[in-house]
Length: 384
Image 1: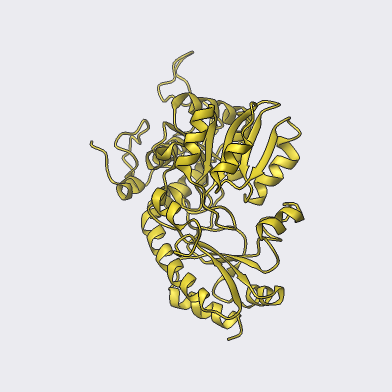
Image 2: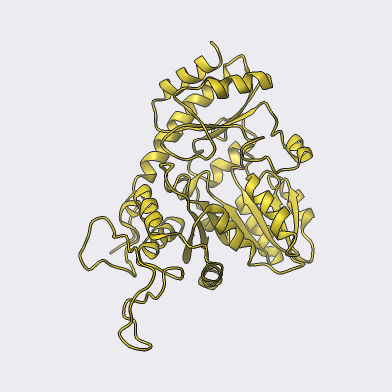
């Protein structure tokens, strides 16, 4: 079978699969088992032994995600943070990692509680400025870790430029691709070595499961990640693998519709008297618009906006009726989040102030509802 288009791979996976179902089920089965039997010592025809290490349902999902990202191998984890944690286990005490300064707060917490204790040296820099990234490289630097678009300030990093720097200095380039998903952006094709996904978000797409992925460019790196996963034990359960597999089937159509909604809502927010700033990479006024357009096929459905006061922000959060005031993103339902206290409470106050993550900032994950209904809900929440 020849290589198929992205939409087809979302539904059917890659052209060839290492695992199959003997009963030819349309929906791939959930192998809800801890162990697999052996015929005799050293002979297990299924290739599976113990679900912490591998499971047919998980392998099926991993093959699909590898196909979408163009990875040599993918490992599925019990959460996005489990994936990030294993990613940082690739490094040794004394190693230095350069990170985007605008990161999901859980990653910053991981660094402060775990990574630094383990001897890693972390520097947060503006990765949207390649000269700043280059200036942060030291002899002990081992990797550049990037979110683009970043969470929640929507900064855009030039992935090709970072890949050139990484190659020149023998570094790994690690990219969190959660916001755009493999539908809109493929960092491995732009020179990245590892792609991270919080599979709870757009890949699953229904706000009903927690998952994470590490997608690796080469097999050697993929094998290291899989061994760490087997050792640390944060593997994704068969049932959750099935849920994410089901969600991915509609990834392409969801990403298109949610982006279409986000474009309309961003344009409407720009005209609102109580909104002082709209952060959305799809706006031509966004400083990263050209870079994002050069490396991604879309702008996604995540946006942030700043209100004229804390009181306005709280009024909107407490006044929405259709939109849900909640953490997370990427699902069918629109979610409104207050980053300063929900997703980034563990980021130092001075860093939040520097980035602009203040008590007037709101983050909106645009869902599949009618854009007109989302706008009407925001309008009444503003009190207009």
